[in-house]
Amino acid sequence: MVELNLFPTIPPSKDPKIIRRNRRTTRIYLILLITALFILILYTSLRQETITTIVKSPSLSKYTQLYLKYPLTLRCSCTHTAIKYKKFISQIEPRYHQVCSSIFVSPKWLESVEDPEGSYSHLIYGVDFRSVIRMQFQALSTLCTLSQNTLNTSLAIFGQTDFITANVISRAEFDVRTEAIIQQFKRTIPNQFIETLKLIQATNHGNQLATMFSSNWKFFSKYPIAYIDLLLDQPIHVLTRPQKYGAENCSCGLKSTCSKLSDFPFRTSNQSLRQTLPGFLVGCLLFDSLLQSSLTCLYNETCLGMMRASIYYSKPVPVETLIYSPLMMPNTTIETMLSQLFVSEWFQTISFDLYFNECAPQSCQYSYSIESNIIYVITTLIALFGGLTKGLHFFLYCIQLIVVKFVDCRRKKKQLVAYRNQPDIAVIDQDNNNIEIDPIAAATTTTTVQVTKLYSCVLLLTPYILFFSAIRIL
Image (tube, rainbow, N blue to C red; front, side, top):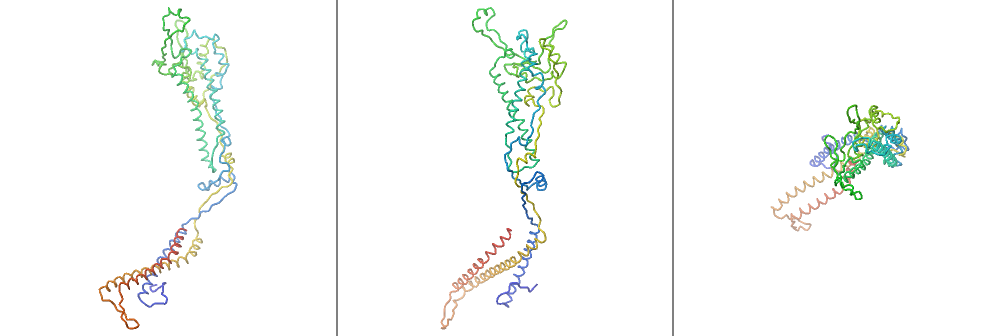
């Protein structure tokens, strides 16, 4: 091992300096070769190979099996990227509040509470609930009808909306996305409906329109009563004063939502009293007070009987109280119900199987990685060993040549300095004539030859450098 020489000269040289230099190069070569082999073995043993597989026309069960095994790399392209919601949402139906299907919004009930005389002059307008009871139930019936028509139209449009997916999504992602879409639909439609009603409320309050019951504005004659007879054929000028409700004297001139509980008068043996009606409110505007009301009285048989008894002109119609449901509390305001379009519960059926069938993937592609085995490592070493040894041998030979030329160049420079301090050197030609040689020119010629050899070596080395770069990339 000490005398091993893998870089012999041709013809063989016995110069101890050259032999020692070649042995050093051999040792460097062996170190680099062993290091390269170690790195190559380590790289090939740790390297993983990726294998891609394609499955044609997979079934749902096959897709489920592949997804459980390859969730990150599985890709199944959809034949139909746009799928209508109605294709995989087989059911999305609302269950409306019980009041919308009860007798309280039916024409039969509205006729039973209608004043047969068609006059409310004997009542205190805006205070006694009997003056507006029929209009409140009629408005409630209209709101139920509008809510149902709005939802039916919106559901029809919703079913025609496209669900776009380029690839089949997983069942979990499908459930999350469809649930988010349905929840957004449930929020958007009521909000749009409520915004329209709020615009109407704001317009009515802004224009300060007076109701027929003088519930928001009270009118006074501008002129004394004595002069009224003289002005019968002329417009009567009146002054207005806003009505006030509640213990805080809420003014209808400032707010349109001022209201108080409905009540009605009744007499006892020695005095006249007023009885409040739970749930129902009266106030500045009929619609605003209705939204603040609740249906508490309709759940209570005693309250319902008291209300019907107070309407002495009501017709006897058999009614039943509303049934309590935990989905919608009795004290829930009508405004809250309207914000949900009177929907107490939703029924929806979403099918991933229908979505997969509509998507109809023609093929699925997945990939997985396998680790290198001992056979792969051995074959790789055998394939690269020959090129590695030859290339490394040639590379070190060129490096050795460059180093030697560099050392010789340094030595020549030192000799050139010594020559400048000596007289010119004479050389005798074949005719015994003295020829003076300039030492500077001689040194320059020698250096030019060495640079030419170095440039040739670099040109020869370039393909091998490119070869090793390609091996490193692979």
